[in-house]
Image 1 (cartoon, rainbow, N blue to C red):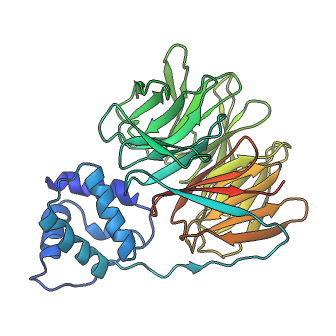
Image 2 (tube, one colour):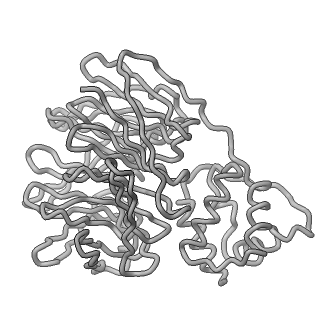
Image 3 (cartoon, rainbow, N blue to C red):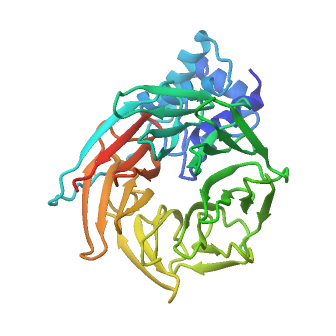
Length: 409
């Protein structure tokens, strides 16, 4: 097992979430510490990779993710390394989930991903009623049949490509971003065949989120390269655009009724809009310099809703006037709102650092919240989707599940 591979895989598995990290001293004879020192700290400080830590179950899952992603740890190495990580990097105190009672009664069903430690990243509800997930650390796309409960996984072409975002095209093919493979992929569920479109620029290493516009063009973000991409499925041609703000980290995407592509910029307090005809990019600055929007949804009035991950707010931008409105999320400033969807102009999202994670509903007409704890903890909901019959879908990365939230009609 090379030192570089373990460092990069820890980075991928933990996603360097940018929160403070810490370390506790361990005895010099601790085999786990020796393994970590030998394989990680000589290249990068492990403390820079562990984020806010994990509980014991979480660390067991993270180590399983690493082995899924290609680290050849022996049984003799797994146990002491895991024990050391559990003792040295315990989970930091999280925001206690605040459950806001209300009149709506929802139900939640949960399915386990087929491969333990696959790290379901994005969910996708498709037209045939299936629920898909990207098994980021297992290099698979998974399909859940809610009627039968059957879960099937499709292996991908390039090893350890890190499937991330998901979208369905008009033919029923599933498109994905290969986050660590520097590619866009397309899976034909009928045959299992995979077609890949590599990035034309070697610096565009981490394709992130993707979405189709009204003309059938596929748009995607490349977060750390500060790019917004455009792929024509007919020709396979890829164009990469650069937003005006350096290191803006383009992240979540949505398309409004006019076909404009909106992108939240996680490295800045801004939202970008791309004109699909001219490819011009306009940025809207959010009033608080500490705002870090991470995911986005658009309602029928073309107002842009976003989750402010850093400050614990739900926000709304009116692109016509530039006006921004904000509401503190129920579980407070450390709740880290993340995946978000609009369902019949009502906003649904998840608080990813509340313990347990929550499903939150916000009615723009009444400006009232209602929320529910996710069974099993829900840890961590990074993105969401909406079924054809208007229910809410979550992928829960650390607990390796997919959740369907059924909303009464």
